[in-house]
Length: 378
Image (cartoon, rainbow, N blue to C red; front, side):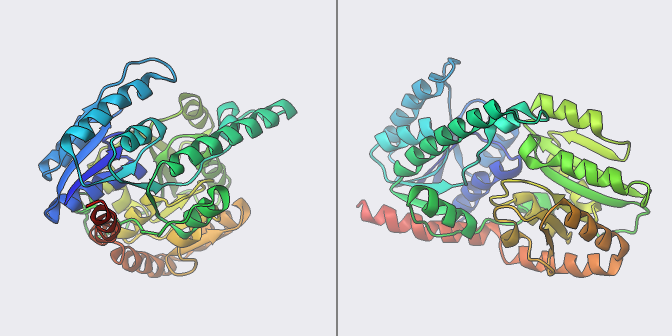
C-alpha cells in the first residue's frame, strides 16, 4: 500500500516519535511510505533515521508570516499529495496541513491526540490568575475547542491512542474512534540497554516538553521536601522545546539534586532510562505519556498524577502507582524509595506491560484501519 504520513515535524522527541516509528514500521512491512512535514522544526537526525528505514521524506517550507504562513505553505503539501497519489493519508498534524490533506482528494485518517486547554494559564505561570486572566483563559479554551472541532471534522476517519482520548473526543466533538495503543521504546533506543547495577543514589527521571502543564515544578517541590529525609535522592528532567520563561523558573527554584537537560540525544536519554529507579510525571494533560512506556522497557516503575489517561499507561499497583494528588504522590514515592524489592516487582510488571505494546503491534493495528479505508476509495 502507498501511505502518506502527514505530521507537524520530523523529530523524535517525546510524543513526536510516534509517527516516526509508525512510518518505519510501515516501511519494514513492505509498504511504500512518504513522510510529509513542515521544514521547521524538523531535524536532520530524524530525517536521516527515516530515510535509513526506507521512508521518503518531503519537507514543506512555509513563509514566516504570523498566523497565515503555514496555511500558505500548506498549498505545497496539497500539490505534493496530488502528484504522489498515495492511497491513504495518516494525519498527525494541525489545521493547515489537515486542510491541505483534505484538498488533495485522498482519504484522511487522522489521529486525535487530545485537547490541551488552559494555554493562557501556562502563559502567565507562575503568576496566580486574576479574574481577567480567568476570563481570557475561558475565551481561549473556546477557541482551542473550535479549532480542534474543525480538525476532527476534516478527517474521514479518526484513530486515538487511549480510552480517555476516545471518551473526550465523543464528549467534546461528538466523534467516535477506535483506540490503537502506542508502542514501547523503539528498537534503536533499546539497543543502549545494559543490566541494571546497584548505585548509592535513588534516581528519579521525568521526560517531556518543558512547559508549565507538564508539572515539573510540582516534582521539584516534592523532591525539595524529601531532600533532608533522603540525601541520596536525585531528579533528572529531560525535555525539549522549552518555554524559556518556564525553563528559567525551574532553574531558579531547583535544588542541587535536580538536573535539567534540554534536547538530549537518544544515547543520553537511554542512559538515563537505564540508571533511573523510578519514572515520575505530574503531567496535567497525560493523553498517553510515551516516556512512561519507554522507561517501562528498561524495567522502571512509574508514579503519575491521576490526570487524563494516567491509569491506562500506569497500571496502579502493578507497573507503578497513580496518585490522587501531590500529597499522595509524595507518600507513594517514599514507599518506593524505601522498598527496593517493590521497585523490582513493579519494574518487572512495567517491562511485561510494555512488551505487550510494541510499535510493530501498533503499526499492524493502524494498517487494519488504513487498509479498510483505502480499499473503500478504489
